[in-house]
Amino acid sequence: MTSNPPLRLRLDGKALSGNWRALDRLSGTAACGAAVKANGYGLGVRDVTERLMAAGCRDFYVATWDEAAEIADLCSGTSLSVFHGVRNEDMGSALESPARPCLNSAEQVARWREAAGGACDVMVDTGMNRLGLSEDEVHSGLLDGLKIDTLMSHLACADEPDHRLNELQYSALAQLADRTDAMRLSLANSAGIVLGKKYHFDLTRPGLSIYGGVQVEELAPHIARVAFPEAQVIQRRTIGVGKSVGYNATFTSTEPMELAILNLGYADGYLHGFSGTGVTHFGDKQCPVIGRVSMDLIAVNVDQAPEVREGDWLAIEFELPKASKQSGLSQYELLTTLGRRYQRQWND
Image 1 (spheres, rainbow, N blue to C red):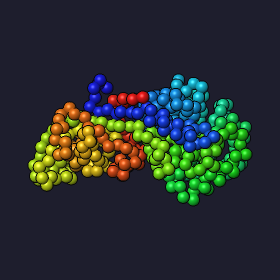
Image 2 (spheres, helix red, strand yellow):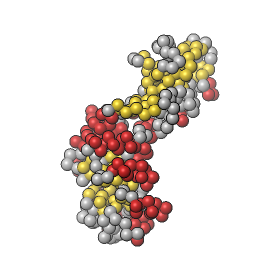
Image 3 (cartoon, rainbow, N blue to C red):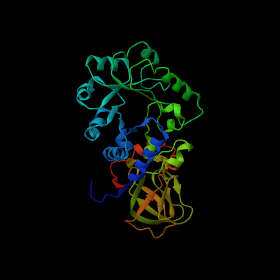
Image 4 (cartoon, rainbow, N blue to C red):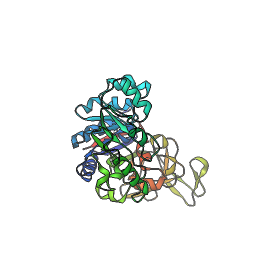
């Protein structure tokens, strides 16, 4: 990357640490971990992990063994777990890694047992119907003799506090408490933390809210924005009445208009959903997105900021709940699709 790319992502390290500390407090007596998969939700996994460790986090979760290898040296003396368990192809890496697998199927359990693997975590499917052993498999004794750190499940509807599945999943995991020798039970993700104390069990595993995501109103007072993308103006132009802008001419001007073309597009995670809905800012002046988002460029209306010139920087409106409504994308997608072309600048 050049030393001065036309995209930058300002990242608030104090907000990141503060968000985790808030979730830790909300977790009560339960330990509070952190999901740092998908490159730390798009923000840079090593930078994120170092800051969360400094804040006091001691339980980290990634999806794959490659992700574990990326931060294994940082996690000495802490707990690191790989959500997707062990395929045949993973066994060499898994047996050499300080990370634990989270076993998800009878086949993975057998594979780990036959290799005389050490400590592991186990995922139980209590209603998501995604990864995990069935409750019957756990009751059958399939896990007997395994050294299990955490027996966990994953809430499917935590962002819908009144959904009946939340209670069903809680009850299902609670009924397995004495069926294994697991040291800990874990169920709650970010939104699950505010469902109530019983959902905390021994360990919570927040993800999105560490990075500024707010899925339920109860989290809003506790969570601060972390990511602030900015893009540079490549060109200024004036268009007349009846002129179209961008691919497929989805926008046509009804009056003369001042435009700025920014070095930002869907290759950078600013996806098509922001076409005609996104907003940028020049100081306190709003500059809405005009026409379609393309791979590397967007056009914005700078009628309210005619002083904008080539080389100026505009802030992208990217507060996650608000940007999610603008684009129709989930807050998770908004973060994890942030591209590699941003210069990430941490402000601690």
